[in-house]
Image (cartoon, rainbow, N blue to C red):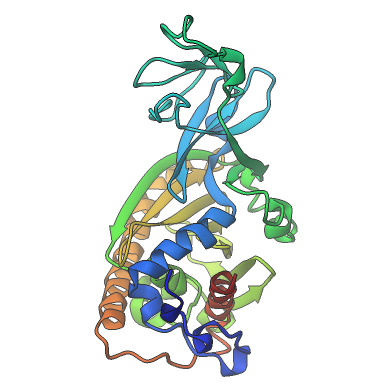
Length: 355
């Protein structure tokens, strides 16, 4: 990447009380998107899915991290592995969708067969090929970790363990938000005309809620809305008292995990969000809905309300992207009370750029 696209002033750490937002170029420059693919997504823990999808031997789920296709598999030995979903022959795909109880992974191109631990088992018509040994071929592996019923993967060893990313969250969740109790109910995805960082910026502050989300604002207590910063995650929390028709009573906990994972925790249910960059000025947000036993009756109302909120976010995020691309915008000051989460995220982005 040309050094001229990253100016020293853009990279310097900023104290919260004096912080300005990232420059517009960081949201519209294709070279920045390429940099982020390697320096952010290639060097971070990424949510792959819920552990319920890989409970038993042969269960597997597919995902992609920084352009690398992965298949997370439960082996015959009970171990969880994140294998590169790329055949060692000529790069054909192995698993093309989530599945249950597979005995092996078979390349869809030429039929090479792999055990669930990544070792090659067989290669059609390769038996007489000079110096070819089946037992010398094995799929590369990424890192994999489970936490609270969620499976995360990472491409490199050069990053903190997942435990450090989620440190303190489990104790804060308590019994009311125990994620291991929930089961998957539905998946929804939205393609949005904004850079992935625009969406994360928006998620990390409640400053916009009274103006952009009137119905959500009525469900939350804006005056009691708090933001708590940790090393690798941010918590936004608000008391709830909305009646049984919507969220019920208790507390809403909105967690963001560096760089692009969100956990929306409500009593008896969980919604996970994963923000996937699709190139300059576009991203996809993947939502999965989970419910504890006995809470499934909330699903229809939750889905309707969630979609209303997302449509509101999509409209404002796409408008912000247009503003960033207009050439008019110069970085504005952040609100230390309401935008501390945005500040922390952007500081981590700057740190990734500096590296």
